[in-house]
Length: 614
Image 1 (tube, rainbow, N blue to C red):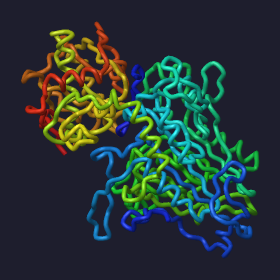
Image 2: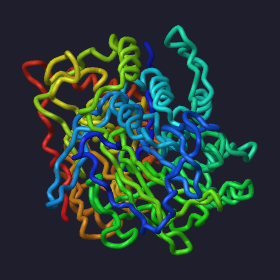
Image 3: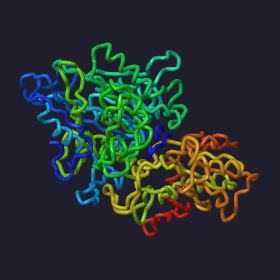
Image 4: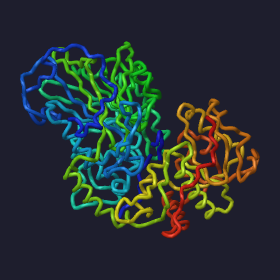
């Protein structure tokens, strides 16, 4: 199972214009210094509908030298067909006076309406995605191995996407089935019609078959319409094996993103394709959480940090724009290419809450993009527009199949239980559930640890359907923990346990800490004014009030992803005397059922086990 910036893995073993609202159309930072173009810059070709293999919209006009090409993009949908709940279904918008407000956002019924409206009047329009379309999905899609999401993306007229790490949650064979179609190998067909697969290509330029050394899927794809050609190269982060279960990436090699993109950019150039967009499932961290933050206001690229910055600075200038993802953040930034010229880098948050609208001005004489005229903005998928009827029907069809499983109550809460913060109330609750499960399997169990990226959504008090306020359904539990990990027990020395806590903020996690959620009884201080492993104050670590004995043995419960050393916690992979338990969702369900009722619901934990110094 994966995790990153809140990233991952679907549950396997289960079956049975431009925006219409002015407030949501605030233009995000992102117009490269405008260069004067001829008046014909937006003149279109003489076509309507598909030309070659792209989606065209609008009436034809005389062809001029310059042609505006609309690129609509989004990323990290994670099978969120219905509007996401709680904070996962909101975005933050900065106002002209500097204050912020939140806007409810997301849901494919609304995403379809917004994209279709945005395409109107744009004769040359492409829709692309930056990976993680599936995986870690809510029950409506995850229960059916994400066939519903692929069907929805087909209806959205998605043209192309890169793979993300979550596309490998169920392995290469399942990814091939999502691309090519066919019923599930063990669960068969879910409806009377055989699953036909994706109408769009998945690109995986840097994912190689270990035996053949060749890309697992297509490395690139070219959109063509009336003489306009735009190439797309798709990659996922090189570190995918670190955040996906070993079984999911078995037999695969993941190559460097920059080297791969540069290689295929040369190949596209040799084929006469000079306008190139990279779809990269790796991202950055903007200085603001507001989707319309002016990322370039301090100076080109200064408003964003993280892996995408170095990647962008090293990708060949032959690539004209980067559509990114993975970190679930929203940004429209310019980052200099190796020649020092600004280049657009975008990300549309996650869960279908935003989409990015980018204008690429194509020069018919050179076949290249006039980079100085690229414009881009993120737009909110507001829920105050008409629902797309075809998406409503799709959701209804799959909801009917999922209802007997998803609507079953598994617990009760007295208020929202959120997953936000260094230590979250929901993180504590899940850790306590795994600790209780571990104690039931082995009374010697001392504590439990939970990775934050494995917690995919909050638990909300308000009813999501007809179950009533405060009721937690199986579908809601599935949305929180959709990975089908098991709860495993392992023995560690005290010294190893201390090292595990230090690995949260050192090694591969130093730049982007992954703070484990801890069960009741384990406490310590996290001093963020320090650096590296020193941020974990060793002398402060206590278990039930007593210091950790480096020579003693401690029995620890964690999910199978962590127990295998995932997320950079190599020491967790070194534990001994392993006992493999049941599904982590089953453990969560057991805990909620045993510890809550309609008259005595669970209250949000205080989230006071980790003392944070800032």
